[in-house]
Image (cartoon, rainbow, N blue to C red; front, side):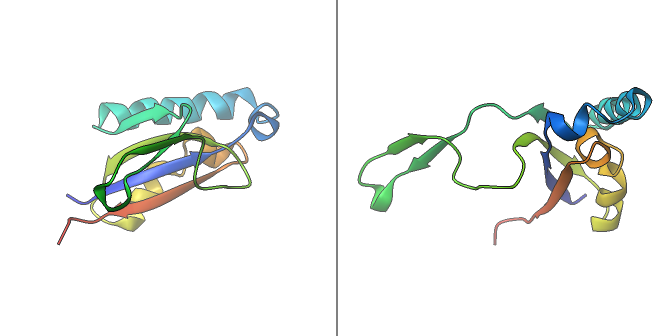
Length: 110
């Protein structure tokens, strides 16, 4: 079955005013996805790793990508297609509490 990487973006300014019942249902949706095999977690502090021309590893603290909202977490889910993946994450906290969830198809290497 195809796999998808999801990236949840969100911040307290959107999460806190979302009604508690909606937040609770969203967290229950996260838990349901885990029971279905999703690998999910809250984002920690990132590091960038480079090894130009395999000449030496360079590590820099901080994110390479920037966004309007901070990254809140990641998941790897399996779904038959993109539409099914969209339906699976439409009820998670970042999607319902004024954040956003990106879905990236995880293609097999050639």
